[in-house]
Image (cartoon, rainbow, N blue to C red; front, side, top):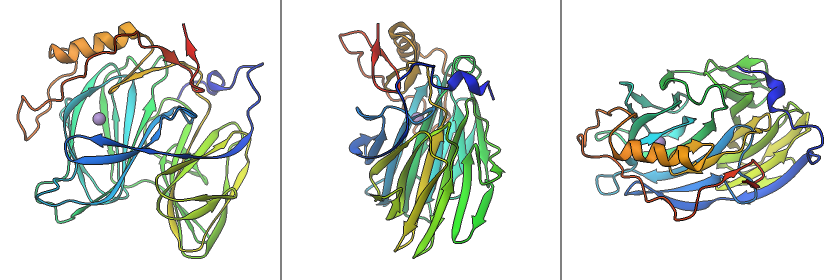
Length: 324
Ligand code: MN
């Protein structure tokens, strides 16, 4: 954990306060067979703390014909990936030698650092034929982003029960419980389950900005009606947020200290400059840096990087403002 103060909004930056903004995601293809709902980044909101990417998928049936999730080996830099499922299983393989199935309630956390490659696939003969969950990225701050690649699996994470609310602490600290997951900036990720008719008030840190999404069911969060496929941005400066759900729900709460470094996000890379991203792309194309994944589709089944755009990639801050 690095110094919290680094991530606080600088004095004189625009006032930031509680918000309640519904941001509908959009559908994007993932691999050959899957469509996911992208909730971050969006034009109106690029980050929530260090969280810089949120894909929601399913519930989708996995059959011999539909194949489920089939994402061949591809590279990452400068980020961590969090896989968190509601239903089903995903098999993760990476270039530091990991082979790890993730199931509901378990955390797969991959740290790319200066470079890693991985594949993600629905199991070939899985007993479970539904795919439903989240994949999130956490931007690594300077000081951690050039570190070595790593992978962690946590078979359980701490859970806190309070009235009808069950909170599973995926990353960071919530309700007095701390996740064992290794992170590099002040942030939190929590799965919240409420039974039918449940209501509660979430304890929040006023120095964090937050967003919530519904993985299943619907809920009213801080006065906004939240359903799957939409991100609710809650802003900063809240000490609590009311939640209630008539049918019951499973939500995911994201939060963190505002991330003050500008990022270049392109394809699977998070960096700071055009040159850095172009270098990562070149290394992947040349078979350097990222190592090999022992993937069932064989050594040639790797995703080729798309062409770089003709204009230079620009760094954007968390509000989406570009810097020269
Ligand atoms: Mn990936």
